[in-house]
Length: 235
Ligand code: FPP
Image (cartoon, rainbow, N blue to C red; front, side):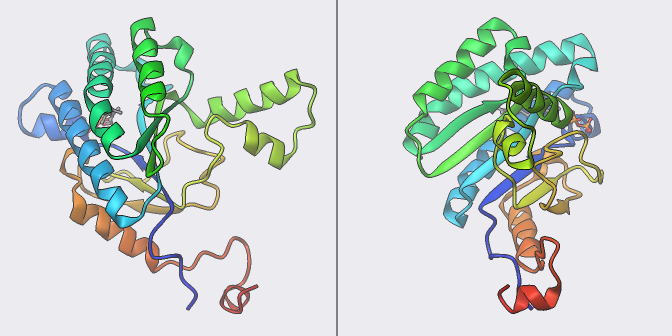
């Protein structure tokens, strides 16, 4: 059987389960998010030796503003501090950081931290880490269509794909935390992504859990609308 390449070039992750991880330990939810940052660092380190070249993570959705104000402000503070703290290791390891989403609505201090981190890691050529912040798949499609319309360009699949805030498509989308939905993540970009739902809560997601997802991906047949016979015949 023709299978997917052994390693996905681009992995996207819905990092779900931080709150439940904390609640099970009678800890504040923000502690779960702090452990989530540790899990992300571990995942970034694990991607490079496995040959993954792009990692895209959902850190704050357009809908997450509806959370209690203290959780939202705690997350904003955590994000700014974590990004500033992690930049030196990323520079050493050739990681290029990109922030994707409606960033203008984020606190101004955080916007400055993110812009600085993008500049400081711009030369990274081993792994691109896209962090989606104040991101929603519907927002992305609408902003892409609006930017084409403003330029008077025809709205074609190719033009719209190129105008998205994230113009590349994940090969594998992982969601942790046991839920099986996309939650307005990369709606357009995941049209042909392989989906993998992990029961691990995000803070517990480790190298073995990543390997399990990659092994599952490697056993899939990606047909992109063709028949199995065509794919196996190299069509
Ligand atoms: C979802 O779990 C997780 C989030 C909304 C936040 C994810 C953010 C991080 C892991 C920090 C990322 C840091 C950097 C530097 C990019 P949940 O709170 O919905 O968990 P629950 O479903 O168990 O309540």
